[in-house]
Image 1 (cartoon, helix red, strand yellow):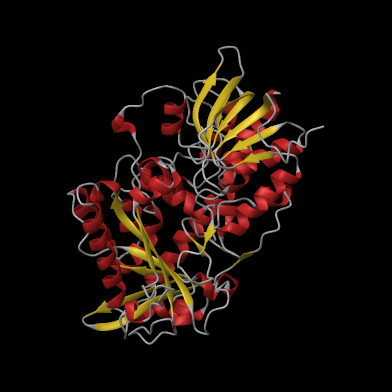
Image 2: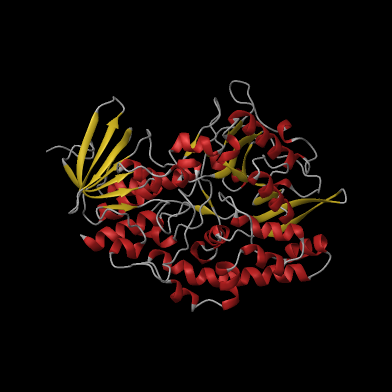
Amino acid sequence: MIDMAAHPGTRPTYDVVVVGGGHNGLVSAAYLARAGLSVLVLERLGHTGGAAVSATAFPGLPTRLSRYSYLVSVMPEQLMADLRLDVTLSSRRTASYTPTLRDGKPGGLLVERHERDATRHSFLELTGAETEYDAWREFYADVAEMARVVAPTLLQPLPTERELRERVDPGTWRDLVTRPLGEAVERRFTDDTVRGVVATDALIGTFASLHDPSLVQNRCFLYHLIGNGTGEWRVPVGGMGSVTGALERAAVSAGAEILTGAGVSAVRADEHGGGEVTWTSDDGASHSVGARFVLANVAPWVLQILLGEQPEPDTKPEGSQLKINFLLDRLPRLRSGVDPAVAFAGTLHLGEDYSQLEAAYADAAAGRVPSVMPGEVYCHSLTDPSILGDVPSGTHTLTYFGLLTPASLFEADPEGAKALAVERAIASLDQHLVEPLMSCVARDGNGDPCLEAKVPQDVERDLAMPGGHIFHGDLDWPWAPARARLDTPAQQWGVQTNRDAVLLCGSGSRRGGAVSGLGGHHAAQAILAMR
């Protein structure tokens, strides 16, 4: 008897073939294999994980960075328990710190993870009154109420919009769902910095004004605040690779087969169910396998191409982010005097005053790299020093995530625009530091600064995400609209395509954005309901 686990892809047909070995594909494979189905996962790269990987990015140094995705919030704890994932998620000591310069005087807004007197005092010192902190607490209490309603539905078939709307305060529903988020931010807060700190969650990987009538910014905001009913973003101990490593082990131990170095070139679906997947292996040989169901852990735009369709060029997603990974010899000191171990332990906001966000959007919409770059900085090694490896004492990772940098900014002059964006990102931090950031950056084994920058084009090249869009396209509301058809299991779980035997299982499914596993879970549940 042939050991299929040792020779993946050797069966003539499988119950399920998963195209793409990112975290959602592994979630699907684990659930379906545990249910007794034969499953084959095909991954183009030489490893699984997709964007949720850890890597040694700097030659000669052992530190393993979460190279693309870097925090976990939306993945339900129940999903992790279902698959018995051996993953530890650690809370950050600080929620956020925002350095400020007002009339030349350095200061800052500190928000503790569990807000206490230091947070209230920080608001009072920045704004001069108690009212802004009271407004902050009221707003996030309203958000938390909605999160507690929405989060439990994420592992269930799609609820309807009406079902959820009836359980949420009408004012909160208006502020978060029916009107542009900027209206609520401007009505409920008066301080420019406080407004910006609230608004930034609406712009992660999303190019929009806070007043965009499409409400894509509202949808992005909601996903960033509903995870497990708390919205807390935690650090995976060992880096993002620990999450996908645990998922791969869960899938394989359940009997799923995983084949890396397998670039899928075509998906064919029969009219009466079933399909065939063709891939090319590293040696250039072409292979095909039959499947009752094909799960697409690729962007819907890519799936159209694999199905032999020709998607319209103007429908291609466009990513909007600048990711810079650093390794530092030491944490830099801030002009405000705050302890760097406190300031960098959570999310450090830069150039994200509300007025700066809107000015940056206007710059980028006009085709210019924003003159003041909005972005956020994270130091994961303060929460999880295990990722550092054997390095000198004081060494730390630093990750910068820039907003409002759509792929179009880098098309005409990719290297020049990228260098300018990196320069302005560093400048946004330097203005708040006692010492320039680059004086703290370590050198790799070749003597080069430990700095790695990625714009949307790099993400597309590395991960085959069209347009470098980290969500595979604009996020949808995590519920079914009023006139949605919910006749089939695939429709009920939000994973349908125009082919019955082909389902979405990645970030492009209705509730699939971020490192959540939801797309994988939902596709698996739809198949189990149809088998």
